[in-house]
Amino acid sequence: GAVVSQHPSWVICKSGTSVKIECRSLDFQATTMFWYRQFPKQSLMLMATSNEGSKATYEQGVEKDKFLINHASLTLSTLTVTSAHPEDSSFYICSAKVPNRANSLGAFFGQGTRLTVV
Amino acid sequence: DAKTTQPTSMDCAEGRAANLPCNHSTISGNEYVYWYRQIHSQGPQYIIHGLKNNETNEMASLIITEDRKSSTLILPHATLRDTAVYYCIVRVSSSGGSNYKLTFGKGTLLTVNP
Image 1 (tube, rainbow over the protein chains, first blue to last red):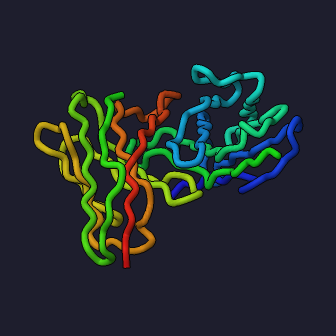
Image 2: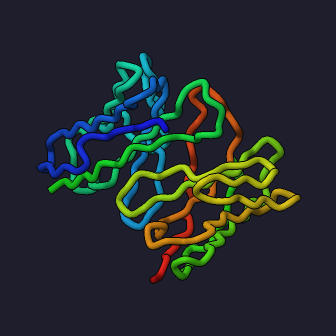
């Protein structure tokens, strides 16, 4: 099956700094990737849709200047949390769909990145 | 996408079948039923999906009622590693484009006990 890899798996940063999270499709090209955030004991919340070669589409309430998304290639999307604060501490997950494939395989998710801002 | 309702939690004995229900009474004719699961601190994993016929794969079986207003995910022989949150999602099928975002509800926490 298709593999989506996130890096890093976990990161601790100081308040006010920026953190970059990478999402890679290892054996397929993904024109579209999705970024989710999950707080403890809560469900996944979609933050934005990342489109290769164009601007990301953000969900309502998500600050696009704080959560910068870059999808410069067909296998890599990055999420940068700028000026991180403790309330940004969360589990960030990306997903990608194999293009031109029927829905039989669904979407593939990365393993997630645990961000802790201290 | 149609809203789904799942029990908050369920328990199952190891080796027994786990039957996870999902209500989707407002599902429309072109919406599929998808099941994902999320083991603690990992990304979600696709399990199975269906439109109106029952489906089976190496992981599970999906039983959809004739009126499509509810479905049941069956793990035939649950193991301790099946302990996870199981999400039932209904959405319109899309084989391409950017409309493949998934809306997750709260899911069912299945605990498999030894």
